[in-house]
Image 1 (cartoon, one colour):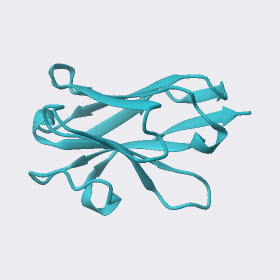
Image 2 (cartoon, rainbow, N blue to C red):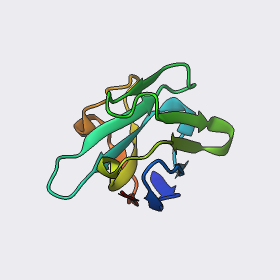
Image 3 (spheres, rainbow, N blue to C red):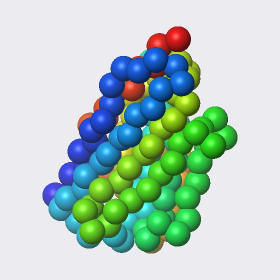
Image 4 (cartoon, rainbow, N blue to C red):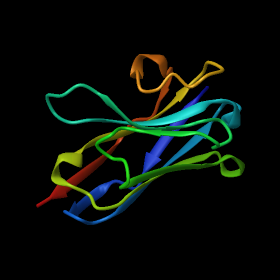
Amino acid sequence: QVQLVESGGGSVQAEGSLRLACVGSGYSYSTYCMGWFRQAPGKEREGVAAISTRGGNTWYADSVKGRFTISRDNAKNTLYLQMNSLKPEDTAMYYCAADPSYGCRWPNPANFGYWGQGTQVTVSS
C-alpha cells in the first residue's frame, strides 16, 4: 500500500523559511515522478513544483520560482521542498503526491494518483 507522509509545516513570518519533507513507502519510490501541491481555503489545488524520478528535471509554478527548491533523496525515499522568502499568499495546506505513470504529468493534480495527508503552512505579514 502506497503511503506518503508529509512533515515540516508550521507558522512563520513573511520572508521566513520552511523545509517540507515527504517520506514514501509501499512502492518503488525512485520510479515515480513526485510533486508538491497546495490548496488554500476556497481555492483549487495547484501545482507548486515537481521533480523527475532521478531528480534531473524540475518544474516550478511561476509564483514560487526563485524562492522554492524541490529535491529528492531516493536512498531515503524522501522528497523535500525548501521554501525561502515566504509570503502570506503562500499560506495553504501543502501536499506531496506521486505520479504512477512513466512520465511526469505535472501540474495537473488529477494525474497524481497517490497523495499524502498534507501539512499546513501559515505565513503571517
